[in-house]
Image (cartoon, rainbow, N blue to C red; front, side, top):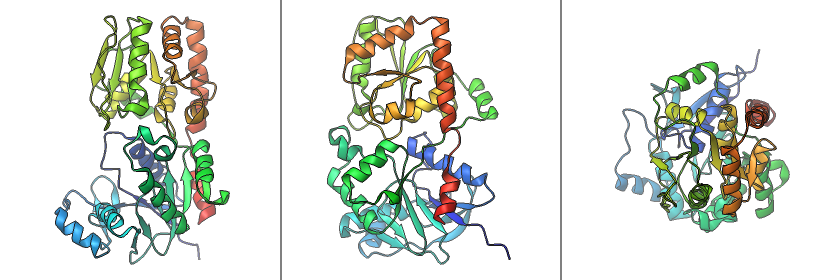
Length: 381
């Protein structure tokens, strides 16, 4: 008799946030990878659906302090197909952890082979292998660049370590940080780069998407916050005296950096988060992506830009250099003059040099087109 396919559940904490956050893209790429592989059966574990909106806060609070586990049942989601529903699970888990200082433990009637939490959450599933993806350790390595409480973040990761979960990191830099900051055997942490793939249909849809910004602009996109180095980018753009507009697309972070131009010749266009295809059209038509970030766990825009044949200016050292390799213009993110010099360089680059940069970027992108995720799951299960 053939063995049944291993069942993999992915947490649906972030897939309702269709604005295109990095964790959202990560979770969807994992789901699509598993959907395209006959060796696995994949489902989402959701906390709400179209007809099941969140219950009142007081009800969730009572559930959390009495440590009542939400019932888990199979249901059909109109977008995601066969899935599992545990109403308000992630909201309850956070309140439970804040009140009791321990993880919420859940056990469905028929647990999957593997439960993959795509982000550290204060919940664990009994009766199966638990995987947790750690996207970055910025609350530990750069606490001044995030609103996340450092001690709570450390305590949550330590609680997960004690539950013997297997960790996945999206870069080797973050893996080494995990091993450096926690008493953790190397065998329990695996680097699996985030996959990025645009099929022909998506590329055609990008071309047809509504245009939201001028073509041939410098582009910054993602959450607009201090760690993205927005103020130095604006200063460098003004100093360069370029006539090329700077387009900034994304929701405001908690620290709300000032996005006004820093000079009379600097044209800055600030847009909120947009439809993903329109965003990607803006990227595909950009003169270059500006991504001299101060701290990252992966740097998804780097690979998305290279996939769309767009030059990249990013930070030297750490994760961004690991992901960009030799295919980007690398700068000291704390040196406005260095960023300025590279903006001027891209503005005045000749056709031969730009062709070389784009060719190297496309070559680098292919490293991230296919994930080793399925091989990893086979070994683990």
